[in-house]
Amino acid sequence: MLIVYAVVVLGVLGLIFGMILDFASKKFAVEVDPKEAEVLEVLPGANCGGCGFPGCGGLAAAIAKGEAPVNGCPVGGAGVAEKVAAIMGVDAGSGEKLVANVRCKGTCEATKNKYEYSGIQDCRAAASLIGGPKGCSYGCLGLGTCVQVCKFDAIHVIDGVAVVDEEKCVNCGKCIDICPKGLIERKPANKAVTVQCKSNDFGKAVKENCSVGCIGCGICFKECPFDAIIFENKLAQIDYDKCKQCNKCAMKCPTKVIKPKERKKPAPKPAPKPAEAVAPKTEAKPAEVKEEAKTVEATDEKQGN
Image (tube, helix red, strand yellow):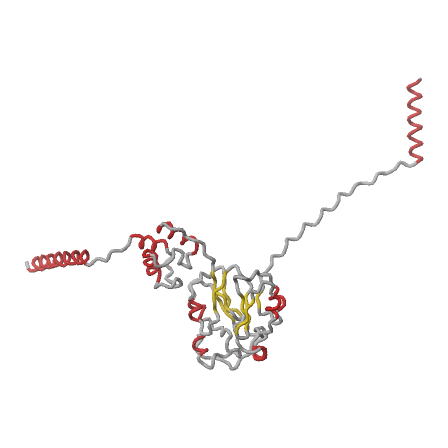
């Protein structure tokens, strides 16, 4: 009997609490814009923060309120932007794809070290020790902190320098934020010519620590026919709005610190087919001609008889 009584009491209490929770959920419900839910559904769900909002939910809410553009997701790209635009009933617009760019070319072979670092394998930790082990205080430390934060496998350390895979990069900005040297910047994906150095040292100091650094000679500035080279703090920089990718600056650079645009080599022309050998005509020898003539005359005589 006691068991039945306990079950009944628990059932009644459960019913009462259920009714209270149901009332509270309706009383204190927060209305969500249906468009926000639709936008959130089409977003990639990476929650990388590259859009400047706290995850995909924050971006969806901002888009629904009109506080963020429909093409604000760097991961989704044009495909997601079109879907979001269709939900919001606006034009997706056209945006130029941006990718991360590491402004350093100082490989293990090209640079000198101040000391041997054996601490925590983190660029921030190494940078806290008098700027890191590399002789150039502006150079990439190559310990891969940027690699660890990239969710898209778009950056790797090759020969002591971080290198971006532009095909995989979605411009989330994680590597840019984490780099203690501030070496990683955004650039248009369709602009290949870049100055792979960010040192503000004088040319002599650059040469002492790195064989491929910008020495501030100004040759690229003089050679550029489009005024696309800017000199600030003894360092060449490229104005991507003016740069026509002509490669003149890269070809004239004495330290080859300017990365050129690779030109596609023209396909080799197919080799001409050899002319078919024509058998030479053999002229009949005089003796053979005489024999043929005699044969013909004999035949004619027989036919006349």
